Image (cartoon, rainbow, N blue to C red; front, side, top):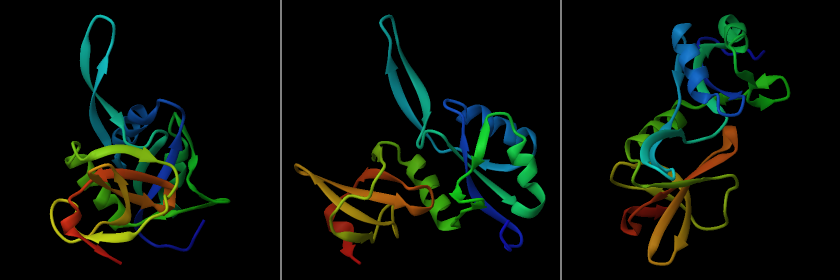
Length: 169
């Protein structure tokens, strides 16, 4: 493992549709865990129901001391592996976790997740709930969208934003 001391955030890849269960197991093991969920409506033939779906399918975030608690994480049912390069788990910046926490508090602005960084102007948000976010602008008709890309897990989230609160980076 790496030489980092103390607790840091890591992304854990989990079995398909096991995000909530793994998050629950982490909490039961008294590990600090974060699973960004978005409220959505699902339509079945007989009913419509509000559900909470993971923002990033297959990922759960955990804040641990990698040297003392990595076995506790890997021994959790549903966990496949740490996300990283080779056998070295990638540290998720605190700033990225804070951004994800802001995103789930503003669910009406989140459009969808994207798997690659689209071409476009790189910007920073100056005001509002997404202040200090950096991302790439994507235009869809009259609606301006900002893609916030998380390099550590190679995933992005597209959010609605007013163009007058953006400045180029």
